[in-house]
Image 1 (cartoon, rainbow, N blue to C red):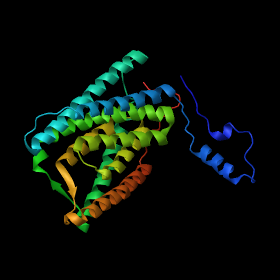
Image 2 (image 1 turned 180 degrees about the vertical axis):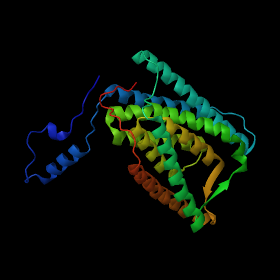
Image 3 (image 1 turned 45 degrees about the vertical axis):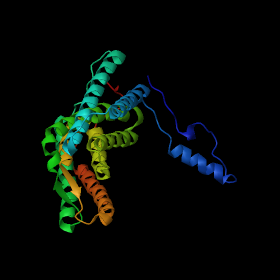
Image 4 (image 1 turned 180 degrees about the horizontal axis):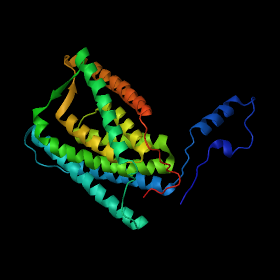
Length: 288
């Protein structure tokens, strides 16, 4: 099933004349920001998955669990998120089976290219971002012993999140509403899941999530982004980018971390232009 929301230029046979500058401006804005829905069912599948996941996360947050100390608090929060994410994945499998009569799968046309590109992006982004902090002394990676034993659990959660975001939602959004909007929505979802799991507003991880979604869209393979998502969540759950300044100026260091992260992600994204990756058209294929 395919439905198309066409640009405003296709609905109006005559462009507004110069006498109505205000209407002409709205006409141009409407044409620029129109969304082309290429596959309505794919888009709907992605929205259902996002809604289901965050609804279950909200419901799980209302359940009070007895915790003793900070370590137990982190452990209960991480374990709860793992269980909710796994349950969401199972429900999506059942949903895909009932709706499409097919098992859930993701395109794996270029698994080696996807994994290589994702690891390259992670290496470049992490090197630029980490070296700037260490050399400028504005922030550094500080280990948190409280969460050290939870690294395997956070790695598992990162892989599950990657399966939901990159293997399911990103593919459907790219198929349904195009690469640009699909990359934006899926990367925001990946970042929000990290925030929920880490109990932190780690805005500096949003740029790398965007680049990973871009790798997923170019290679049509969720293998690389899923693996890297697990590494990122496990690493940043144990380490925290902490500025060594006093608390009064800690916010400034956080925004520097975020700004450098965007620059690092831009450099990593430019590097992908030099790497020959397989290109797959999503227009002629269904979401599942």
